[in-house]
Image (tube, rainbow, N blue to C red; front, side, top):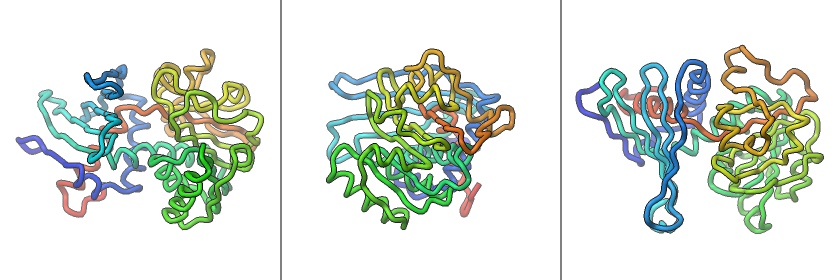
Length: 310
């Protein structure tokens, strides 16, 4: 570590990040949940109506710090979302690094999805359905299609024109055949179903989900949000990033009796994952600070070590 804090700008981190780096950092973060610490999410806003920011903090080994994610809806010349990761020196508490990581954050979130799919979805999963047509949904489609032999993608959107445009974007990003379909078709034909929306009520009927499907719910990270029907929980094996957080601000806030298993425990071999081709598996991602800290550390390594890949 240098004496002076390191600053990695948004343009630098965007140039450094890729899917492999993000996936490796995600695996490290999920495994670190067994011994690391995370703390309650702090939610705030500015004096401008509609603005929102969250602070997620944690520590694991020599990683200590906080991620600040912000949403300023009226931004025009700047992105509405931003992400800044602050790392502290674990020995002194002094500033170690500041990493701007808005673009990298999209890779980080999609990497958690890819990790869950690689861990829980059937090996022969070939049809990926994505509900949602936003920026993050595109990253989810690209990341997931890399970890299973996906040979077609179905996309579902609230507006037909947006779904068609999004289908073209996914095809360009993945090189796969992509079709915009209605919700029931997309859910019923999915081997892997990803939801990446800002919904506040269920997006589909639980009965549409076939046996053997894996579902990754990526959009719920606050009170009142919801993407999945509660009835699905009764017939599925439930997994998440942090059980305490998932049942508070994640998807399982709507199922008080749910007892989701931490994905990190499955990765570590201390809890079972999928045990049958007929299992329906659900992964809820509400996001946690260790993901951001491991991502920042990986980006710093590439920033400070020319050609660094670890």
